[in-house]
Image (cartoon, rainbow, N blue to C red; front, side, top):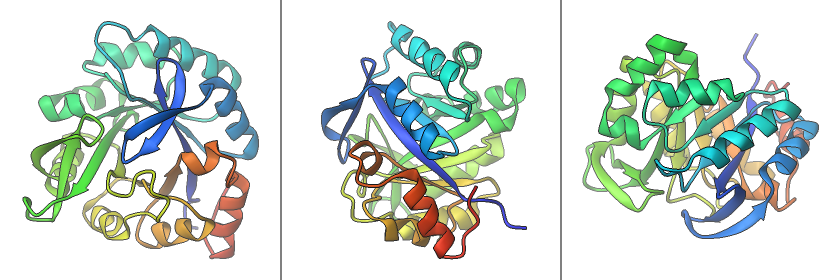
Length: 253
């Protein structure tokens, strides 16, 4: 029996509010995270992902409080990312109700963090969050970025994903910065390449804008599909996406 495709709303959070932009720029307010989380859980979301897009070392209290309030109301897995630099940060978030932790910049700066999280909490807790851009500077044609896509690293996206899995990452959250917020569809080539190299689940992110965008991402190799603005704006519901996937012959919960 094939595993069910997961449909995951993503809440990009800044200062306790959900925000959304295009290509990670021109962020605008999209609502209260606890309220939106409750709505998506009621619609049948399989998981929720929170990304603290303005996380800083000196003030994470808003995020911890938000995670706690959501976890008290919503009984589906929560992935939280942004500003996580140590296993103690992970422990605190898990203690507030998170189920999985997304790491990006801190893992790039210190790859050993991935193994430390996996060793202490299990690989299933550690999600490698990849903000990827197309680039002629790398062998694969894709480069890893940080700071919401504004800063390019020297890391080939495929090579970094492969190394992170070896270090202990239990899932890849692959976000196309080029497609993010454009509603033009997922970057299917990127999804397929990540699927080919990965021994762990791949979550496709960036570009969802219509019901017919989701099934091709799954066909390309995504184990889960993630979207934000189409859900926040009420253009699509979780149920409509699941029905579209089921109509394409995909197993959904």
